[in-house]
Image (cartoon, rainbow, N blue to C red; front, side, top):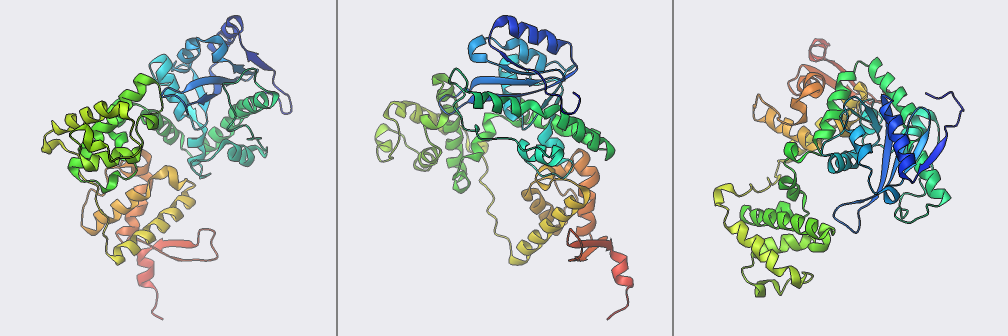
Length: 406
């Protein structure tokens, strides 16, 4: 870490010789931090506009538009011998896969680190820096046009600030994680977030169609058609290097899936479809028709819980949030509210295998799930305590039974 108050040199890399010098420096360090600026509004493949790098000795802005070939940088990011520090690095992981053909070899994500310390998740870098270092970051260039050249003084300052504090914040958060004995938890989470960008692990495009707005109201045959339309749209957008929504909006895919067209005339009544994409749309529908009914996706479950079950679900969510506060964990990182509801449903039906999601794996299974099951199974009780910061206090269920009546 640089001495307090000492400003690091700032260098802008725009030619191959300077870039080669930076690559040599990165090969000689064990850890560095980086961020990227890219524009993805107009293309299917985002345009990489800037790479910001921080070492213990200097800050760098690498201009991919001037250099064209930045592959050597991504190969270093993918090297498991290098520890790379990012914040909210999902896109950086995807870029590394795109350029180097594999994910970062040893990545620390400060957003995850903050969540494991109860600082909230997801939390912006400005909020983390403010909380950890007491500094305020200027975020005025968030929506700036990064493809424009030359960069303005404001853009350059903003870009350097994006990585200026990453290593220092990581030093502090890593120390706190170590003090809590959560080093293995952190490694597990960093690896999980890398896996979440891997199509071979997550199912990739095959499952992304499930997130199309309005798909939760479709029946199995319609969902099968939607899945085929989604795959066609992704391939077409990639081929044309245009945003997928330009090829076909989500609401139009849902409408086509409902109508199940067989000929061009069946699409004429749907406003907003591109006429030049009609053949591709009909081919996608026909492709879906060749899928046997046994392979159609299952329809979404309709939540029609009894009022008392809804009330219990809300209560368990409150208990979960209180437990997370007590354990210094961000609820948003620990599990989804859907998993909490699934856990309650399983217990109400006597299911001894209450979950197959996040709560069934790793540190959540060992440290969070048992606490929830203690409450659900009556081993631990709680009561409202307005004097407590968490507003709930906990005690063994037997203590309640041993107290005198009245």
